[in-house]
Amino acid sequence: MKSSTYALLLYPFIAASRLTIGHMEQIQTVRSWFFIISMEKLRTYSLLSVALLISSGPVIAANIPAIANDFPEISVTHVGLLTTIPSLFVILGVLIANRLELLIGKKATILTGLGLVLIAGVFPALYHDLFSLLFISRCLFGLGVGLFNRLIIQMISDMYHKNPGKQATVIGLESAFEGLGGICLTLLVGQLLKMGWHTSFYVYALALPIFIAFLIFVPSDKKELNRREEVTTNPSHTNNKKALQVMIGYGLLLFVIVAIFINYNLQITPLILEKNIGTATNGSNMIAFIGLGAFVAGFSFGKVYKTLGNYIVPLSILLLGSSMFVTTISQSIILTTVCSMIIGFSFRCIMPYLLHTFAQQIAKMAKLGTTIVLIAYNLGATLSPYEGRLITQLLQLDTVQSLVSSNAIILLWISAVSLGVVTLHRKKKNIQQT
Image 1: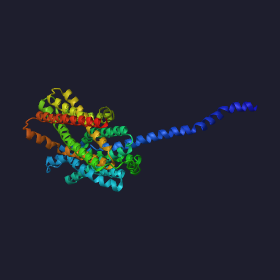
Image 2 (image 1 turned 90 degrees about the vertical axis):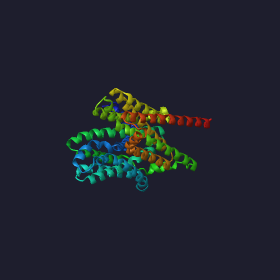
Image 3 (image 1 turned 30 degrees about the vertical axis):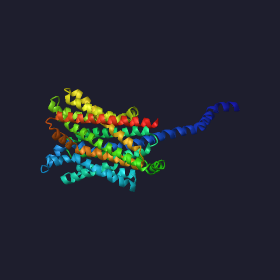
């Protein structure tokens, strides 16, 4: 056989080898690109998965009647504290985390909090004979949540500080994951409750896979923190003082809004029963639709932020108050359900905005601002029942409908004031720019 024939037969193999050698670097580059993208998603979602546990404290509320039956010597009020006492210790955990992260770093502090949530959360399922130990475990559970509550936002801020748009989107997703965790864990507790109230505490075993994913896929925060500190400028004392005043103002505003919002969650079932338009089951469904609205708000926050900017807070409060007022005059369970979903949506637009706004500050002020927001939120949630009692006594109210409508009017008044403040601030800023 001639050499030309051999060359003709071997040509496809030679061409293939040349093609492989010529494009090997390009293929390797594409593979590396896909690997980087997949690792970034794993890092982001491993970090966001921690938020599934933030709102998991109250999910065992359905256990309270069964626990009260097993501990007849304990007052029902004290048993009910098992759902609210974690909020107080979340505040303590947030304050401890501010110091602990300086010693061991953000990642190690979050892992410590996840470990505490896992152990303290599951403990009642393993040992539930002493109410005092049960109570202590709930306190430690709240402490664990507090250790990672603020640091999740801080790590998101560190990762995406060069891309504010992406940062706003991921902070919104954090809020969505928080709401999603509350909904899913509540439904899971309802199923586990069929096997006994103590069995339902196994729901907190979810902290284990979250712990493992965070440990493996989320990198150490030291390099990221150092890099952020390098690009941070030293602002004047006057700017720091002004920023602190704004943060405290937002904290007080958030405290009032959270107290009214949580009180609505407590009063929606009595309101439906008082107006005779539904049952207790319908009231329970309202809570679920509030969570659904919050979930939608978290996923759409990035787009909402780009559209509304600084007007998010006043417009969200306006929508919150308006929807709450409509529920007091509604005679339709469908309309009340839609309003409840809007209430959840509008409320969850406020929190991510505040967290994102404070994250734009220098590291020290961002930490302080986030701490103020979380303390205001948890204090408002803890004291919300007393807010309803205070308004009832001050205004001499005698119905649930009048209480909810009074809270709605307070929100509408706050929205008008905040809208005026934002408008004046924008006009002042435009004048300075021209």
